[in-house]
Image 1 (spheres, rainbow, N blue to C red):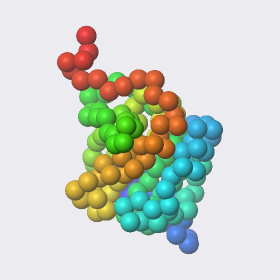
Image 2: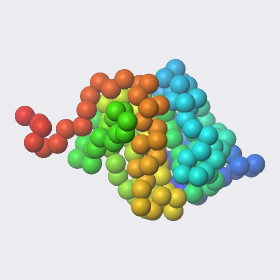
Image 3: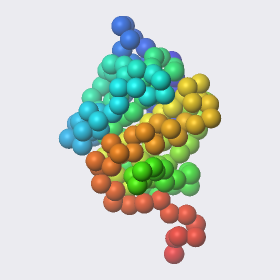
Image 4: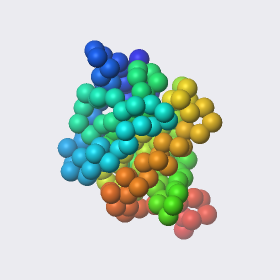
Length: 152
């Protein structure tokens, strides 16, 4: 079992990944995010999940998990970075706990979080949010990351 920052993931039954849903998982934008998620991520196949607004790739503690409808984060001292490719940019709050890198969208409602085990992406955990960028932009940005020199 993988635990961290209120997110518990477990393998149950026939490959089902148990994931707690976010409070706003029923938001229609989350259906678009789930439907737009790719079939493969980090060479892991998409796996059935237990909750609305969630997607997983892989099995058990080595699953990459996406949850849409999580509470949007407010201002934070955690690292906030803009990740993008091909003209698509998304701001993410990034933190790491116990070998799991947590990415949470910043400035989008509903928010989306993605957890990436270092065991699957030891050198490049940001590959997952980069891959999800175009899908995430279905939720419009209303705010952006700022650094100490941007605040005024």
